[in-house]
Length: 92
Image (cartoon, rainbow, N blue to C red):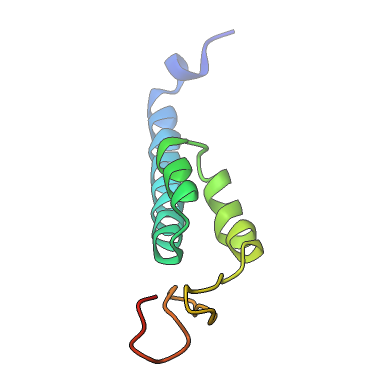
């Protein structure tokens, strides 16, 4: 039985290219969301670990919603951007 890589090199290259594109799209989205929400540990984990989009998809749809919006230093909640909801010019 022949090896898949040697018997179908073009098909193998296409599959690898599609996996790279898939992974880059999800990694970019997850890194953007984690940076906007200020989730530094998640940002580092998503940047270092390569899981072909699995961890990134879980972060985008599950984990960032579980963590909530958080609180500011002044006690007010944060909006989706991670900014203070108080509306004042506070130091949050």
